[in-house]
Amino acid sequence: MAKETIKEQENAQAKVGQSVSAIDNFFKEYGKAIWICLAVVLVAVLAGLAINKFYIQPKKAEARAQMFPAEASFRAQQYELALHGDGNVLGFEQVIDEYGSKAGASAYLYAGECALQLGQFEEALGYLKKYNGKDAILAARALCCQGDAYVGLEKYSEALACFEKAASRIDNMYAATYLKKAGIVCEELGDNAKALSFYKQIKDKYPQSIEGYDIDKYISRINAE
Image (cartoon, rainbow, N blue to C red; front, side, top):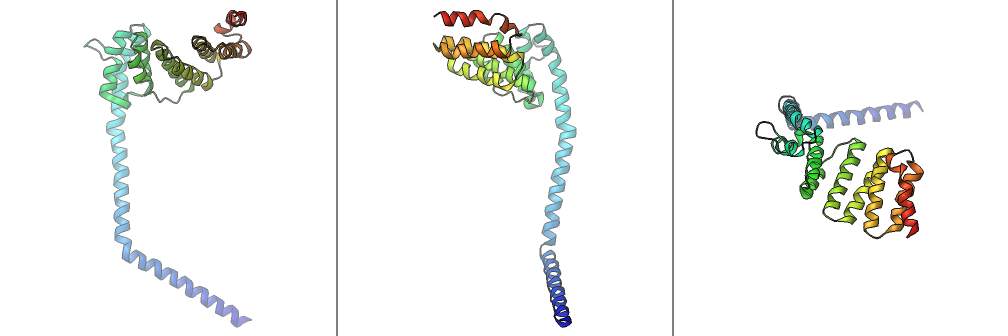
């Protein structure tokens, strides 16, 4: 019994020795290539960090600074100035052209809303579809603005899809606005039953919203037809 145990231990040691030898041979053969690969990866990581710190982040800060006048014009409802600038300060259009995604997602939402207010519906869609912000409220707002642009182009089916998506993104008073828009578009499409379902959602879920206060007249009008 003892002899069997000793033999098993010797076999185990032999296997360990073989494994160590195989690893040693592997590193002798490929060690240089491995170290070169590790060095390349390290250089790439360091280069990426340097580019981010010394180029991308400063560019983002510069873009944000350039957007301040356009944001002020937007708040003042000066949409033409906010979008196109005046030669002295940049509008959102120029900020996006110069800085691209470094301007941040909000630049596309601002530009889209400005174009929408100016009746430039195709241009508005071009900006709004590039918005990729993570904030649920702003994402829903961008979808709603797309819907408004489609309404301006009389593409009501596309508009309805946008308003429905916007309403599904959030569960607050903003959703009532999107549901009402969806209902009005449904009426435009001749689908009163679906319009009624949107209006009833407002009545049931958001009675305290602005839309909720007068939604009964929309419901009554459809029921009377």
